[in-house]
Structures are given as structure tokens and as C-alpha cells.
Length: 406
Ligand SMILES: Cc1cc2nc3c(=O)[nH]c(=O)nc-3n(C[C@H](O)[C@H](O)[C@H](O)COP(=O)(O)OP(=O)(O)OC[C@H]3O[C@@H](n4cnc5c(N)ncnc54)[C@H](O)[C@@H]3O)c2cc1C
Image (cartoon, rainbow, N blue to C red; front, side):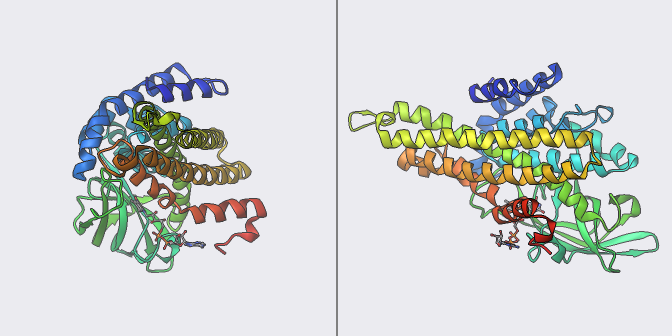
């Protein structure tokens, strides 16, 4: 097993007893990342999704981590998911973003909010990786404030007709099914729907290639023109779509936090190797104290990032077992914001320092740290920006009446 990942598991074991099945899964996660590292790098340079990584994830059964055993999954909790995204994140956030959206956000949303019929229809294929999910909330005029969305639905003769455009949708062009959020034209609020991408009227209008990073994660603009679904496509209660979205994003943020720990670990291993091997001014650059400062800061970043993520994930496990406990739910929500905010900022700082240690070679996608630098930036934006996390943390501390969103 990869050295830093193995050390993390050993450290967590002092507080949490992994079951035999969980240990096997952690090994499978490690194998997936190990097998996918070289192809991820190749596809990154070509700006395309890494199909080999998907094959490897399917083979090792890691896409079913949170899905109940009766639907072909492993029924494991948030800590294993965060660790999965962490190990995948060591190679950048491209494939980790695929995993976060498909497994952490969407499969868990369906597991939690889906009817028996919906679970039966989708979860087995989600666990095996033969039905890929995307999560479509954001629009050009509705980002941090999804209530401004324009995508709408009307009900006609027992059918539901959806129209609108979603923007910056990860997995948008490779998904088989989209968890789509749309607003009722009759004033019944926002509802979540399960929409199959084979539906007439669905189209991927733009594949965003001109990104700053995340080149193996497809990001698309998708269109819904008179897309028709039945009432059985409603996920959760009609009008309660934002509950579905926000509860899924709590899970997603812990996943992204995990991915950021992976970025820091990727930066640390590559920087230590480079600092030992690269010689300037007659000695290894790792012997120059200013380079040592960067190494020490990256190591500190790892320590600062990993425990808040693991703690939030453990609280979420507790919350999953005690779903009606509102106080615990609020605390978990706050901890997931805190974990994502700390980990994403520490990841960005680590990647910046790693590029500095690599010098000119670091400023290249051909170096091991260039892609980590490019990918780390998005973690401070997607699934809720730094500022939104900050506001959520503050209102959790001050009280709901201080919520900035009122
Ligand atoms: C690569 C990538 C992949 C993505 N994948 C998905 C996906 O799969 N599905 C999906 O639905 N979305 C996705 N997104 C969208 C992402 O979640 C949004 O970009 C994010 O929520 C921010 O929204 P915005 O871009 O509209 O920024 P805005 O909301 O316009 O924010 C702009 C700035 O204003 C600040 N701001 C906004 N409101 C406040 C406030 N009340 N107080 C203080 N500051 C505020 C923000 O923090 C930010 O700094 C993705 C984005 C990217 C870049």
C-alpha cells in the first residue's frame, strides 16, 4: 500500500477500528489508484476522461462503497469514502471529482432519498459503474444562490415537462442519469428529478475545455428542451429539492476534503523526492533551509487538513445512524464546511509550495506537481465556495438568526 495512505490508516486505527471488509476495501482503493496513476497523467495531457481508471474502479468494486449490500454495494460509511477520495486525490482531482459526483454525491442521495423503485432501477448499475451519474444544480445565473435557478418544470396530464440549461456540470457528457434540480412554474418550489440522458430533448451543448485544471473531469453545459419524465422521476418530496441538494453536498464536501488531503500527500511525496535529488549550489536543495521551510509547511498542512476531514466523516457516520437528531445534523453540516474549507486552502498552499520546490520544471504539466497545482484551485470553488463555507460556519456558531442567506 502507498506509504502515506498506509500511515493514515495506521493513525486513524488508534481512534477507529476498521472492520476486515473495510480493510479489504482500502486495499482495493489503493490498487485502483496505483493502476490508474500512469493513465491519469496521459489523459490529463490530452484533456480527456480516464476510461482506464473507471475500469479499474469497477474491477475493484469501489463505486459501490456507500450503496447498500442488497443493491450490490458494500454499505460502508463516510470515512471510507473520504479515504477513497483521498487516495485518488494523490493523482489530482480529475478522477476524484468523477468519483465524488457519481458515488459520494449522487449514489448516496439516491440511497437516502430514493423510493424502492428508484433504488431498484439505478443502484445496482451505479455500484457496478455501468450507470454513471451527474448532479446538475448550477446555472449561469444561479451558483452560490441556487434559488435563482431558471430551469423549470410544468405538469401536464400526469407528465412533467422540463426546460432549462445547467452549467459547469461534472460528468455531464458521460452521465447516463442526471440528478437535476428544477423550479415549478406553478410556484411549488424546487424539486429534484432523476433524468436519463437518453431522454428526447436532452443535449450536451458545450464541453468546457478551457479550464485551469481538472482536465480528466468532463465539465459541461447541458440543455433540457421539453424533456418529459413521469412523477416516478421525482427524487425526495416535490418542492423539497434543495433539501436533497444540501444534504448531498454535506457528503460531497467531506469527499472533496479527502481529495484535498490526497493533493497535499501527492505534493509532499513528490517534493521530498525532488528536494533530496536535485542539487544546486553544491548540495541537495533539501539541505537549503528555505526549501526545508516549504517541506515543513506542506507537512504541517497535511496535519491541519486530515483530522478535520476524518472527524467530520466520523460525525457523519454517527448522524447516519441517528438521522432524526437535528443538533447532530447541524453539527455535521458545520464540520463538513469546516473540513472542506481547511483542506482546500491547505491543498492550494501545498501545491504552490511544491511548484516552488520544483522550480521551472514545476511550472509544467509534465512535472508531478503541475497538475496538482492546477487541480487544487477548484476545490475552493465547487460544492460551495470558501466564502459560503465561512458564512455557514459563522451562522452555525452565532445562531440561525445570523444566517447571511436570510
Ligand atoms: C470545474 C467545476 C466543476 C463543477 N461541477 C459542478 C457540478 O457537477 N454540478 C453543479 O451543480 N455545479 C458544479 N460546479 C459549479 C460550482 O458549484 C459553482 O461554481 C459554485 O457553487 C459557485 O457558484 P458561481 O460560480 O456561480 O459563483 P458565484 O455564486 O457567482 O460567486 C462568485 C463569488 O461571490 C461570492 N459570493 C456569492 N454569494 C456570496 C455571499 N452571500 N456572501 C459572500 N460572498 C458571496 C462567492 O463566494 C464567489 O467568491 C462546478 C464548478 C467548477 C468550476
